[in-house]
Length: 271
Image 1 (tube, rainbow, N blue to C red):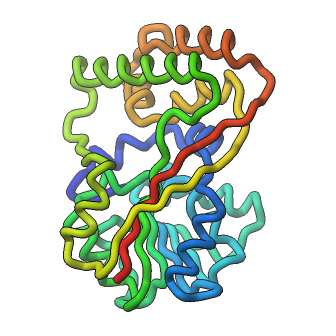
Image 2: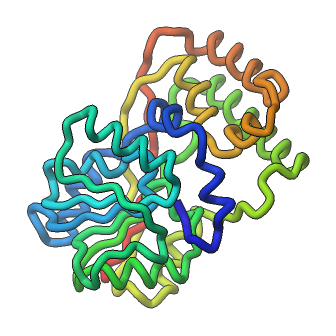
C-alpha cells in the first residue's frame, strides 16, 4: 500500500487480508460516476488503483472500464484480491505487484488513478510524480478515505473510538511498529495542490450505506493495521481491549443488522 522505501508499512498489512476484505466497506458506486464524468469519458479505458489491497476499490470499476489494474506490494492482500475477483467471476481486473512510486505502467495511459484508504501510507512527492506520469492529460487522480467509525449508534461509535485510541497508545508504548510511517489524511488536498502536477484540485464528499451489527464492529476493529500488529505480537483480545469492545458492541448493536453510514472524503486532482 505504499512506497518501497517504507517496507514496515507493507509488512503491517500482512496476515489478515481475509478479515480486511470481509469487514471493510466498499467505496461508494457514485464515485465511479463522478470520476468518469470529470475525466470526460463515458467508459474509462484504463483505471489504476494504487494500494489496491484486497480489491475492494478495484471491484467497483468492474463493467465500467476496459482495463482495471490494481497495484499492491503486499502479497497477502494481492492474493486475496485475486481470490475475490475469481469468486465473483469478474473480468478485466489485473492485480500486479508494484508500489506507489514504481507501478511499471506506461506513460500517459490512465484515465483514472485512485488511492483508496491508502495514500496516507505513501510518500507524497514521489507518489504524485508517478501518478502524473501514468495519467493522460485531462486524466483524474482521486484519493478516497472514509471517516472512522461509520455513523450507526453513538454509544457503539464512542466505544470504538475509545478502543482505537487505547490500541494506538499501546502500539506506541510497546514499540511494535518501528519504521511504520504515515501522513495526515486531512492534508491530502493541500499536498495535491502543492505538488505542481495537477491543474485543478478540490475535495468531494460522498456517503455509502451498508449494514452492520456487533460482529462487524469488532471485525472492523480487527481489520485495522495497528490492532492486527498487536495481535501478531502475541497480545490477547482482552489485553488489546477487544473483549471490552465486543461487550459494548453486543449491548448497543446486537446481532441484527442495521444501516451503517460511511462518510467519504475524496480529494481529486486533474492532470
